Image (cartoon, rainbow, N blue to C red):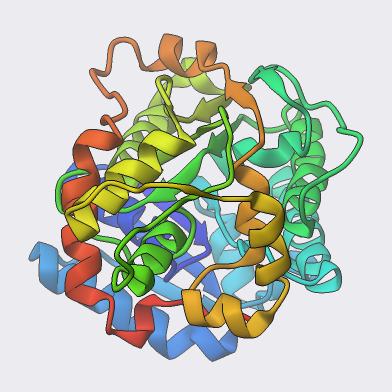
Length: 362
């Protein structure tokens, strides 16, 4: 294990994986397949990584397109890659909950199909790590197993649906290629530093709380006993790198989710207290909130995507039997969410005025 091929670079997770692999001396060289429009940014990011970590690891940023045969890689780069013994990381995807169906299908499903074809035809892939999502479960509730890939009656959005369809393709590949499927929960910043690159997911809560902090009372949003599963990036990175070189992990699907998630109301309360110094009081009916957030203008004003509401009342718990067994000897575990909200809030407050951290809504 030493030569790695990435899709999804220079995205946050791919960048952190490269840094983690360098830190653990498990990276001799890496390739990254990027769209032509991302070539300059990816090259700059790779050079920045080398400077920050004070190393000179060989890398090649290759122009391609994962939705095309051979990942859109031209000769002779394609033949050169085929001579390498690789660990392949497929992270490229559209992660936006509000994504349009056509775009999500093209990137998430067609792109993954092409990656599977590439892996199936490559002479020597040591491991393919595919980043799915725990939310392939769609609207299924209750205890959700790592060993299940059951089509739900419905999905909450096109992101979930297309990631489900993509995972079906990777599941079939397990018979031909050593594959590990990673299903993360909702990814947040570093558990100790709070560092992240964009304010989505649980940061939508923080956006709303920060923009309403002028009010004398900040109410709860709806009423729910559901739990929210949020995991820090450092746990995702450490666990994924360990599993990539752990032979017993080949052929398994793992939930990299919080084994002890908190109820939504407890997370919300902790965030309100951390950002405003006061506890939430009262309650806005969820129906009223949904009606209000039907307006893109209000979504933009509060910094909240309406699709987020679907996760506040969704009652499901992710089983982590495979993850716990495979990681048992590693010492790697998921940090407590509530305990690390202060560092998360500190980073948010330091960067909330930087438009680069906020996603475009609408």
